[in-house]
Image (tube, rainbow, N blue to C red; front, side):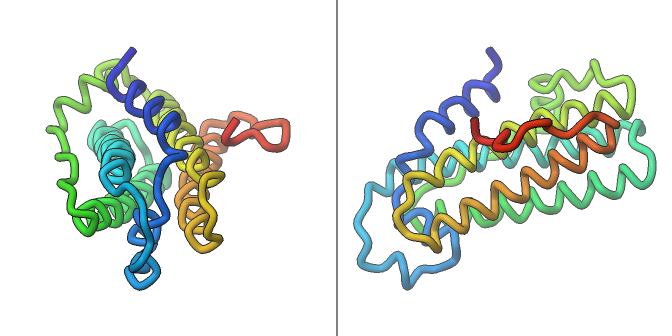
Length: 189
């Protein structure tokens, strides 16, 4: 099992313990976070797992863009999605710092290339298949934290992150010419 797969599974298992404090800060709502109680050390751990996954997504899109395998307009979409992941990364890192933690460092591109088996990418479809798999994992990871949230505004933040990932998954699936999930409630299961 790859480190990335282990991280994603850990996030899915532990994501339901993210405190309201952590999510309020992630939402850019420090006033809401004031006075809330919660174990922020667990939040830092969970947010760092999510941050690691965002680093991975940014670098996966970089590998795809730099491979020469993506053609316009797919390349433009990949760069746009990479930008979304950079925004997610920045929000997560800022929240980790506000909680007194140290954001997990981004690895070198070569390490991501090895972890993601970039040497096996031989076509645009290969790159898109990798991105689709990562986006589905991210969608499910973010959805996993929503049920634990008692505050509607905080649940909305987690939902917005999951929605970005689901949008990416859907666009990439369509670009591959694959059918969208046939049944309802296919994410987060």
